[in-house]
Image (cartoon, rainbow, N blue to C red; front, side, top):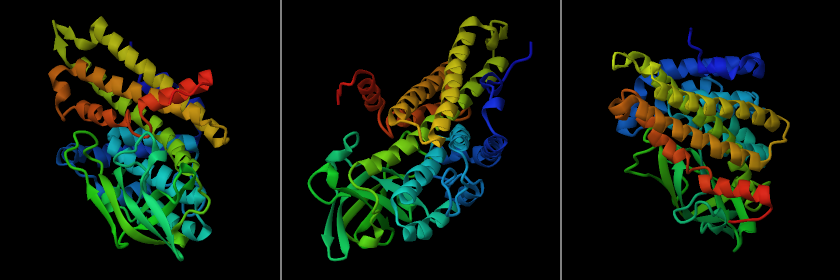
Length: 390
């Protein structure tokens, strides 16, 4: 019988609009034609493809699901599908887009003044200004309320001092959305637009990464950085601001990692059809088919859930617990798929030629960032029992 593709089994057609299919297909073509020929070298060299940023912007994916200010105003499902295709290329590529869109641009779009929106969002949508999101600190990841970065009022300005860690786009960002305490407790957290070139502000690369090597990941160091009050995000007060940004971003992470899983499954299927052992293709072996079937089934479940939750998001009806469930399970599905695909490819699975080990290494990071697997587990557990185990 003729083989079906995973797309066939998902049954995308009745789930998507024409525009959503067009966006998905255009991003898939671009990733295949423009990104895949270079990703192995970029990963091995530990560089992000900055020279492709203008092309990424031309795809309309920067600020894709935001309205106005030069943004595409596409559906949340369309944006999720774009992330799905971008991460089939590499997690670093999708991370660049989702940090720019779902964290930095969203923070300004949701919490900023009209002047801030007009100044930054059109440039960011065009890829001419790059943002990063400064929340995580060296000693405060899962508990952002413990942050030590401080903003002290000084006349019409704020003096910001502190360090941020594991910041995507840090090294080449034109602006950083920095979250700092203006008092002693988490209720005093405020957001600020810190601009590149402000005295006392530095960004550094994080060396030695074995995961997300094709992503620019760095740290921010701020020593009495003078930031005008006009750069404060006035609508953000307390931890609710950064946490809402993270909830927004986690949807794109969840949909994105499923694209990496799909790529690994496709590689495994192609390999088992070509690789012959004991006189027949590996694809004819029952244990191999079980591995492929288990991988495929979980990816299908994740994609259908992603569309469903995207529709809820479009109605402003998506609960943060649902996002935790989606991000948690999608990251587990993707990491398991990459690891299983590696076993199917045998020793070939550890080479960059087949890409699977690259995805597996990247997915070790997605399992942890934007809320660890354990934190999302506790969020779901609290929702189901009404009891907090944090």
